[in-house]
Length: 160
Image 1 (tube, one colour):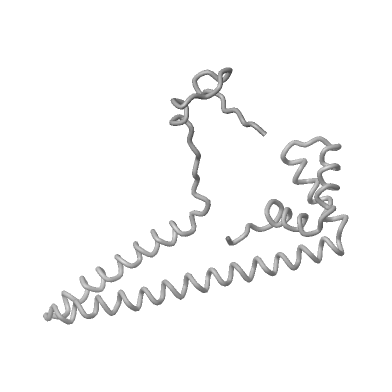
Image 2 (image 1 turned 90 degrees about the horizontal axis):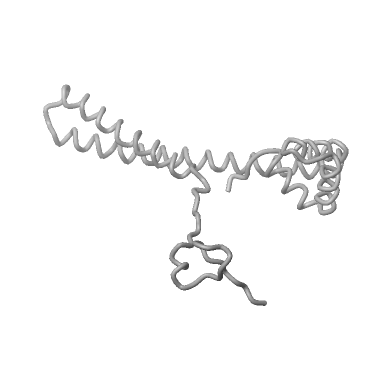
């Protein structure tokens, strides 16, 4: 099978070597959770030690004590933030697993309701009644595919 690339400058002509530099692949941020965790962690991690140092500097005359207290607070804060992040992630995974089990149960035992939810999704994106029916029947042929669809589009988002 031969694949022909068209010129970016003139789409009716085949691409030349000069056109290859015009191609690009878009890369989008798929999850902002890591970025959010970093920003929150840094703001908390920098604010509290400075507040502790400021408070201690008025009460204690020894700079060594202030430095040791600041380092101790950074260590304790790091452990607390790390543990909090771990527990939040674990809770989110547990919630997703529970929702997945519930969705499998509903597909098996409440099929009419699940078909209605699937059709509603397709109606919301503008498909005709006929296409809603066809798409629902096609997805419902494979239980795992249907549950994955419901989890992704009609229910909760995956933690991954």
